[in-house]
Image 1 (cartoon, helix red, strand yellow):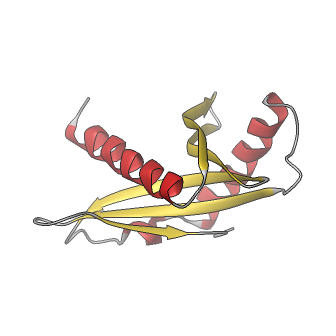
Image 2 (cartoon, rainbow, N blue to C red; image 1 turned 180 degrees about the horizontal axis):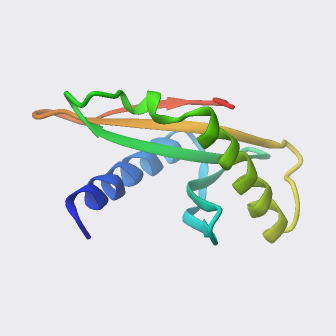
Length: 120
């Protein structure tokens, strides 16, 4: 695994901890669907299915992690959520929500983890 991949995996681990700390249950990590793409984290928040995109950046990067989710990426996440539901027995009673977790890694000190609910 290269440095970028390791950084992304670390960010996803921090994101999963944040979600479980908020009372959610992580169902899957890195769920792949052929060429359509990947869901970083699939979780349950009560009776709501949460599809979570994780973006990790080093402090001082040009782009803040939360700015990295474009409308195209949001649409792809919607399609992936539909595929996940199809392969896992249907929609949950509380519906589906798309969340974003941004992880900022400073040169020194603790990472900053931001969780935005219902970004799309």
